[in-house]
Image (cartoon, rainbow, N blue to C red; front, side, top):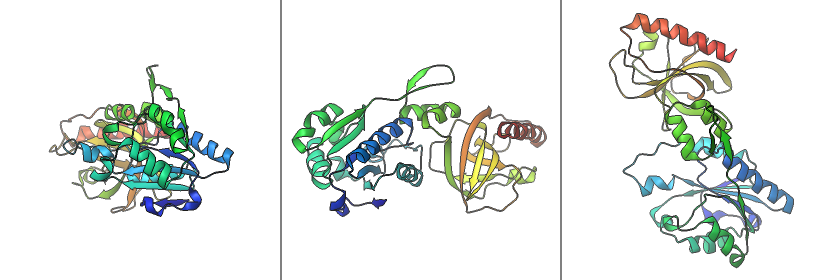
Length: 310
């Protein structure tokens, strides 16, 4: 697979392919359906399969006053996209100038001109161009003018734990994660919601009470405060983990952080990159009267994590 950050480096040998475009935050089941369709069409026609994505998300530039925490790091997103098998993966750097490009110019100069796509595969909610003026209706109608066909993949629906049937989207998954509904989020993603971060030194209170935790520095959307059963991946090793999202209210409350107690794991992993996979909600965050009742509760939490991973 060829990964590019500059459209001008797009090889002539990859022109004439099937193209999928999107932000792909989460690379969820809806994205997977669209990308799978694109790959199948490319294979059937014997042409390259090309994916174009953006970094950062356009909302970062369009609404800088509203901090946006993504579902995935850029590295996670590119890994997931690469796993779908494109010949070329293009990561376009988002700039103010790019955001001013009209929908018609994007089709003429980028899709048809630079990439020479013969087929564009998108989801029903896809928009493009300045002020998101381009729609799938425009893509279908204008495609013949620019020499490409357009395939619009239906929205994927997913049943939630309460039997609600919802359309899968990045915004819906963000809503679920923000409410601690990590099982429902996993159903929409097609895999566990996963935080990736670097282990940093915290206050080391966990170590003082017999539960040393790995404190992660992360830039992703944090689940709702509480304790979760999950798994921690450190390199090629996977351990059950009791994951805490919160501000340590039993002690001096501070900023909301992500930390995890890795079961049966004693290694020093400061500075390491760790993936925390969220499996199930255990309980809400609670302010205990002191360390002793907190330790007793943490022992129960760990027992629940063992049972969940058994």
